[in-house]
Length: 362
Image (cartoon, rainbow, N blue to C red):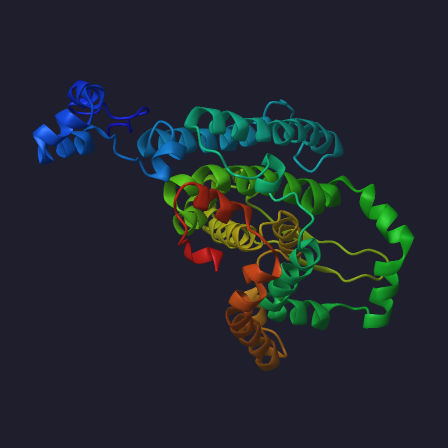
């Protein structure tokens, strides 16, 4: 594929037209329509706006975008393994080292977006941080509505969790609202990894940085399904495939799912989840919604459907699963309506590139 021409086309017959203009009206009248035709031919054709914004052209833009995303994914995953240790991954020392490397890669990831912008010549029309979902407009609905939508999807697992929990609702609320419980969580390295560091850094790198680079190349719709392929790479290593534990102490709920899914299943699950959070990022224009949903899903783990089929209260539990999925599909579009969140940065980016009919922008 040949790149677009960066300059204007050389006008045909330009020197003839210049002579006719210098000769004055008499020469034009003598030539009649031929003079007008020469002048019209000499005018350079106006290039579309997308060509001017596209820089080197769509082919090079896509190659730069894919290479940038692949580099970010490899850097993120590679940062987890730069520390050689025989200790298990849940050891506090290993977690602290990985915190350091992952935070360094994540803090440098916006520089990759800046480099991509310089190489492709694409002008987003907004600031870098706004493009990455760091903005105040519509932040409260962006924080609450996507999380509410995700909790509706997990209605069945939440019912299952409450049925199997030995503590009642009042005791659970007391523990949740107690400052001592939060202080304990903030000193627990595994809790910080699963609920804070992993959701924040993964959504920053794989959504906030990758989607702006992929959208001008593929469009918003295909980017929703392309971006999770890079995200799946981060969760594909075998040591990432294992138990999802919800550990509750001192009377809090005790529930665990210790199944060990295959790497293919883990990749598929994370790819579907990545497509969902990419959809939320595009539709809300905020990073906070995907981060909170990611943290909630890490807490819940994969739904224990097999356990629900064998549960003593199977019928109401399965009804809760079905109701949650049905309400999720029904409320997916209304709760992610872009009108609730203000101007969407990725939609502005595509408008600057000449694509004003992106379906996810309305």
